[in-house]
Image (cartoon, rainbow, N blue to C red; front, side, top):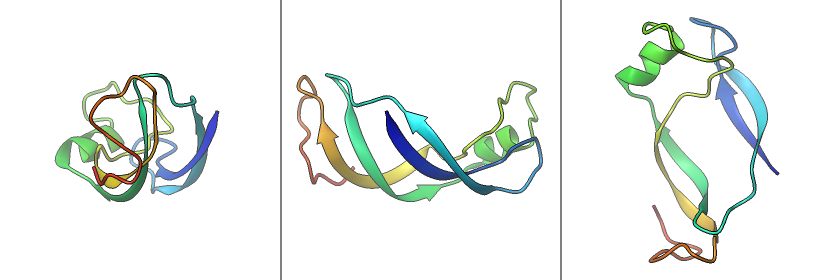
Length: 85
């Protein structure tokens, strides 16, 4: 498992606060990205407010990321460690 740090809302409409969680190890077709920057869009805001009624908390918003590849699974094609993605 990989320990990850982020900012999460614990409940709908709550403030973001530091949050640590675990991700599975890198699989054969995966890449591990060290996220350097993250954008928050309107759909993230809707999820944080649970506007659609389907949000699960704690919730770490942000799916528009820029980072650098740290690890590449053996079957991942066209990417290498150090690539900016």
